[in-house]
Length: 127
Ligand SMILES: [Zn+2]
Image 1 (cartoon, helix red, strand yellow):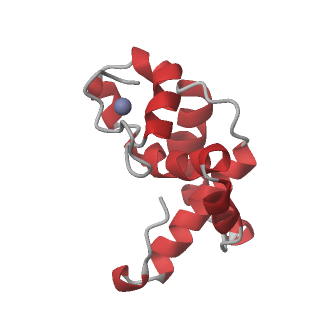
Image 2 (cartoon, protein in one colour):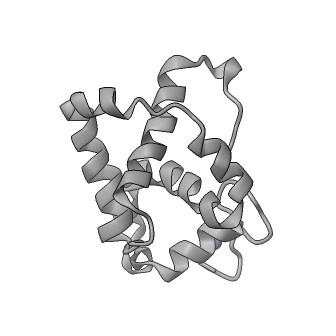
């Protein structure tokens, strides 16, 4: 865990016990708080990815969601942003190589499609 007073102890959402355990084993522990601020874009995708191992039923739901991958790939600025701010942060900066680049892009797509297409009232929290 990140600390003895971790707010994630026993929680299944938000800064959950799964997130806490994963981050405490990653290279993120070597970063300062200021260094983490620039990486916050990777947290929501990471929470989706963590369901793969900690909540397979939710992972299946995420896997069934629209990602518009082909269309998003054509938006070079968006795709590059995801490469730098999410894929590189999770896999290289935090050292979580267990998550494939394709899966990271898929969860980015799930989040982006829901962000763009749904109004807040229609959104259901999944992570
Ligand atoms: Zn924690």
